[in-house]
Image (cartoon, rainbow, N blue to C red; front, side):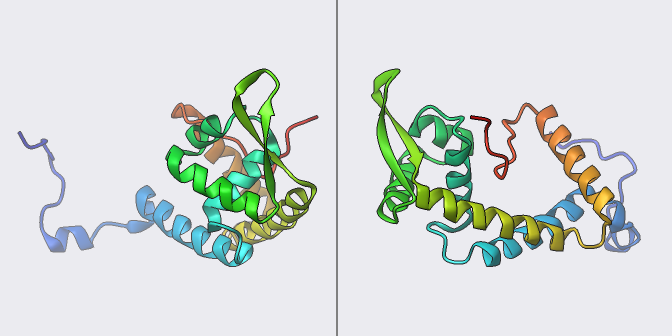
Length: 168
């Protein structure tokens, strides 16, 4: 059964008369592609690219109690997460340690080198994000960031800012 489109335009000429400036999906897509490209440039040859950066930033936050929890939080398949952490460990950015609360689990912990590398990467990512949002003044950028996080949390998503370090 097809959905009732009501008075939605069905011809090419009717579609071209739409104002894409009000198209939320289009705007998000443009921003996401620009963000992806700028962040990729900003982090350079970081192991596993943006996925590795996001993983490393989450490790620094220290909020996930195990490698599996880390994979679930980031939406990364657990087998892929194993290879990703292996590569971060081979680069001296993280190490696996037994979890004192549950010896069956392995904690992924940032090394001092990993902390240094992610600190520099976070600074570059924030600068890249500011470039993507260059059409907005600083107050508008902050408002947009707050509203995006609020909307994301409203979906029930697990949202954290990867550049904010958990209080120790």
